[in-house]
Length: 227
Length: 320
Image (tube, chains in turn cyan, red):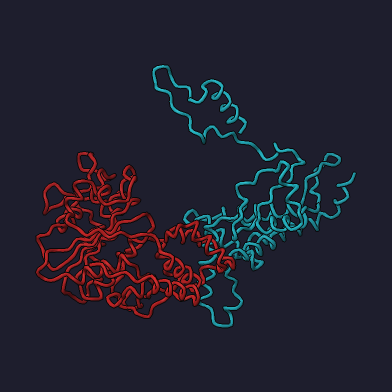
């Protein structure tokens, strides 16, 4: 990104609105999309409040009168995934794959139509709920960190934060979905992994349990964390 | 040939009833009996008719074929373009020269499904049908070719030819009063240069295939007791010819003159009534699982985002 910014800067200072072309060629007009300078979210000062983009939260702020204060101070811009849509789910929008959700529905509906009347009640069809359940089942509570103590590297068990453990769960699901036959598409494999994880089965849940087992075995090293 | 439009009070009454009682189906399974009263409602093609008429390669896309398996039925919405085409076919008399109907419209508006509805009508009324399906399939990939023995200078596509003949044989077990020829994406017959090559290593152009010549020959008015129903498809055609979806642009001068005179039938996006009927159908088939999709706000959002385009609506509903 830094390279892109530098290039853009050079281009803009050199040509003032047109891309530098060879002397005999006609200048190519620079499009507005090329002019857009990319910025990371951290460029905004820490004291700027987060954007309020949900209608219900805005209503709440209006009720308490806090919206008056917010309207006169600089606020961070909303991210491209922040939307006021009724279908918005912060956890789903960032990490999910719409094609995989479709495949989840396909698989579950096929099971549903084959099942008897009593079994039908136990089958979850909502892909969003399956996704949340799968992530919750894959989230580890401990992780192993390599720490070098006395010339030996120990795998030291540590508690992980909520954010980190959610990230690990998503990463494992993605890695498991990538490990597939070449004829199977990624969304299809991700759908099967999500459904397996929702039922606390499958490779990703096994990986979490394996990690917990390893952490339990290494509990003697836990004190290396504080030396 | 157009039927009189429903008067506005009746239409608003019907729309109200669709919104109120999540009503999306008509019990009339015979396409020749559908009227404007059934417009926007779904009818299901019975399983035995599916087996008789739509065996072999599906006339619709792969995605819709998957959807058919998920929904456990083949349902079509009764829409105005199909009603109009069927009405035209009903008027065909033995003495008339062959009728030409061209379905055109935006991407994903339902041209293929209107065509399938028409084909269902024809096969049910014992027409002899030659359904070429999506002919872009013939020219977009590199198939095995062989020089034609009967037609000088032309090339055969043996695999495609066998497929088409098998389909004709399967679909026309019980026969036959009139002839129907259908092509999906007819602008492909003037596709231009294909990937397949002649013996001298030069590219074969799409009209140089015997299959396309046979179809092109049927687009004349010198035969009677039949009809040609075709669609023009922007996305199925050449990549450099995608600026408009209108028949004159997609067919070019040559193609337009070949099909002329024809009856153009515009396939538009869903009306409000059709949109709510479709949402109700998806709910009925358990395809819409998100509780927000059942609220008026959610449905309004879907309506706005899709612009009531059938394919866009389907894409939006996929992850919900």
